[in-house]
Length: 633
Image 1 (cartoon, helix red, strand yellow):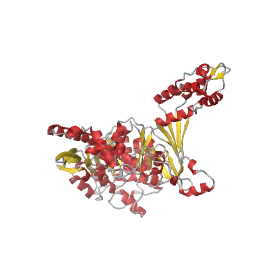
Image 2 (cartoon, helix red, strand yellow; image 1 turned 90 degrees about the horizontal axis):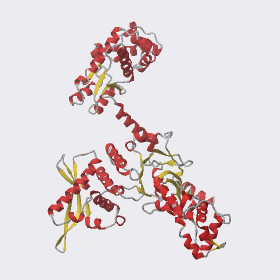
Image 3 (cartoon, one colour; image 1 turned 45 degrees about the vertical axis):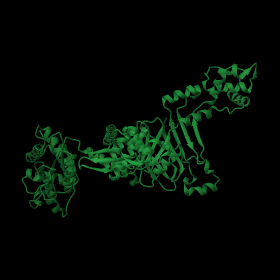
């Protein structure tokens, strides 16, 4: 049975969430603090909680409670949570087997719970058809005898066969209608003859339980092994339950591990530690040099040594040190504890839905990815998972269909949950934007090799001239190379530092000193190779040059004048510095928009490119040859 849709009404700051579509595997509720994410999870948890938690009128919207009472509303009858489930094919077939063809439409079921505790089940069950089928199959033998009702005892015995009744088409004319038959059967048998109630009971028996986790406990490094091994889960505290799950996860043979034979005991403990190490290293990429260690201590009782506690330690191969579990980072303790605690749900057949409220908050961004991978690979196949977050790294850009945005729109509208991104609240969208931005940054460098340039105008000139030279059969930029504009000269060194050690990159800069000291430092650190830092001045034959200086003065002035509706000539310029500075001085400004002349080239490429001089084409061809020489053959 899969959860398909949820609606929360009049619960805390939610007036009406409308229908929230739930994914069949993982659903992510994204929103800022106090937006209503927790309210949504806790309302859903109250529908059928794994750990008993009744609905409380204290959760009724505070600013409406008194007014609604004065209006005469019965607050206890309000149903704050409604959930629609879908039966799978096996469950549908079972329903038809038990209840006959009257249950053939039993697929989507809506279950709701009122503040007063009443649970309502809305299921498509044709009760009239069921009674009619029953009469058709049993009327002659069960319901009438020479036209008279049979005794209550005989009817009661007949009613026991209801579930096994084989429907028969047709019905004798003298038989009563379905509703009349139902009434007479109840009167004659003295029983509450209600097949719809039986269907509801059948549904509720199969309804998944909701496990809400909002407070995350961690495993204790010292565990009372005797108590844990002998006690059932439900009789243990939350931290002790994690310890018991640890034993189950590692499949430790407690009796063997506590035995007196040293070699057997040591082997069992080592095998247990190895199993846990493999499990944790699969989903903890932050440090692959750790391994789990398991040991016991003993306590003397009546002069007899008794194994009392199990100890969990972590050995770090890199630093050659063993530390108690409690002395590892809080993020690692949480992650390890989570893996242990939820491993028990990977093998049980108990139908559950996990509700995780702000998990993985203490983890590094990459560790949050490990956590999501664990949910994806280990839990989502077993049960549906719904979690809340405001971290960009807990949003999967490749699975945006899982995201539901949660936004509190004030007292008038309450909290709203939606699957679209039309929210006007920037804070609500931030985690989603952050996730997309990070994914874009990671996937921007899609080529095997990358050319880092200062801005979009550099990108335009290089791309347009490269394409043109290629069509002319001349040297162009290697097709393997991706041009990456980084938003200014000051950003080149930053991007190179962040990405140089992770991607294959060549850097193209102007020949000014701005940023060069930082690039020199990166070269000394081995992050960049000297040969892969190219100054435009190398090609232009100037100490200082920008990419615009690869054009002849007249050709660049044509682009500039077209872009700004001016009429500058070469004689209007003064100095030997880059042409963009000369033009800025002529205009009496510190800097102009370098992108506008590049846009002219982009818009009028057909007419401009074919008229470029041999000198300009040679300059760009030389630049591309220099760049290509930095790439591996």
